[in-house]
Amino acid sequence: MSNNRKVIDVRSEMEFMGGNVAGSINIPLQEVPDRLDEFKAMDNPILCCASGNRSGQAVQFLKANGIECENGGGWMEVNYQMAQQ
Image (cartoon, rainbow, N blue to C red; front, side, top):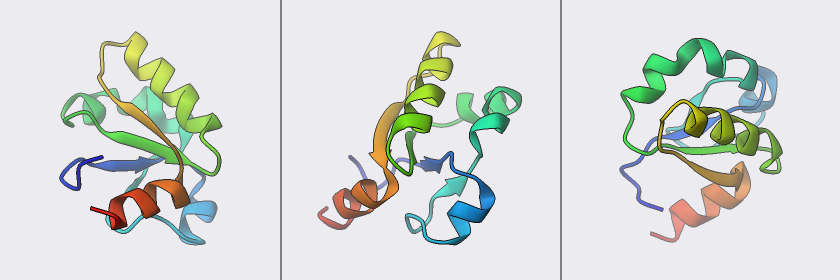
């Protein structure tokens, strides 16, 4: 995981406000289809959520639409990985 890649948190706004990866962007899962252009402008973003389930769904959708991205899993794990770099 590279620190210069964007981290996208697909949890709800309320969940995101309760704690998140520093510098991450909140795009709730249900908004992902409407924000494809934003994802296309990103360089292989890392998606996360609470456990990796919702981010997995988002990654599957984005890849089906030709967007390279990675499922980072739970946001706390992504946060830990980013801190190790």
